[in-house]
Length: 195
Image (cartoon, rainbow, N blue to C red; front, side, top):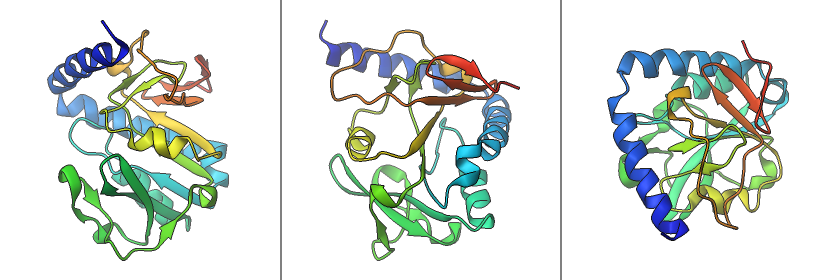
């Protein structure tokens, strides 16, 4: 089986598993993840934050987005502009988000565009990952392209029940140094500052 086939199989498995998680578990996990994330010194020090807009079984990032805005941070979220290509667009209110590509809530096309160099801290999604920060996304390559140009701090959000030890990776897959679950933070695979 090729790496691509392994990834496709794992995506199928993880989507099915994510679909069995109770809304109550996802809500409680999201609340704990938000508390940990907003306490991270790297997040607190960031002037500009990039964060995905969670949907479905992803971590609900609305509280994180609201917190960033309330804290006076510049906030940017993804806008899908082409297959595999997203831009970072600044928002000043969650009311600006509208249904867009793939049913995602996105900023308007005329919202200010930021470059990866302007971002101090990025919050990255995954279908699954391991504690060492190897991630499996949805397969579009959006975040791998972003990460290939980004040099700031980044954290990946994943409910503990969706963690896996083995993640098939390829040379273009970028690991994320910090992984945050409802149990706490993993740094380069090691529990750090766990609650």
